[in-house]
Length: 326
Image (cartoon, rainbow, N blue to C red; front, top):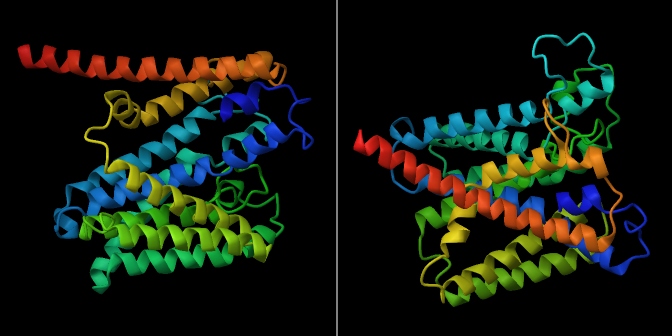
């Protein structure tokens, strides 16, 4: 998605191209699925064992992971090579620095899951109920929040977390609803491991998903986009659960890509958009390539990220063997 959007010539990125519009339509679901999956994985690991909140080792790990994701997100957009020499940074560079991306969002999402799980444990409320209320709340108020015209002279650091207005790609409203939605499913699967092993449950989810999608198209309001994305997420959830039954073992390459998803995300962003110490392909040849060349480079990017992921695994094993020998 990033590769095509960054390198494909603007003449191809038109509403008259059925292929481009189809690609654009499908790309609208990649981020919600990514965010939803993050919520599922983290909450599943958090609630997998019936431990008290204070004795759960996932709490400290979650704080470290959430904080590190936010810091990495800011580091990737840092406006200058010189850490403390910020006098020459322009206002547009500051706005870019404060832009909220997927890493910021997931980091805040993980910390929010920990916070509300702690509150739920104190109030003796089932966490699934808490996150259901939170999901619904974010869903309802997001169009209202994004209709507000925010003052540019205000605190852009905080405002960027709330609204699209200052260039944020994934503000908390509406995208926080997807990580909370994932948290609900992570909790349910942790508490009831065989919940999705029943064909009847899968059919119910699939039917419910298709109903949501149809309702989203019929409704045509500010809530339609969120409903459509939720519907597609649950369609994929049911389909993947059904497919996974016939899979004895996940291929090692898929395991590797999943394990190293953060590194893949960071490295491919640096290659495309650069970093405080380098420039990327976007600055060199951005939005100038033909469709064929762009597709070829996108495939090369997939291959390169797979090789890097396997290389990281190899390095981990080598490093472990060295320490074990010592």
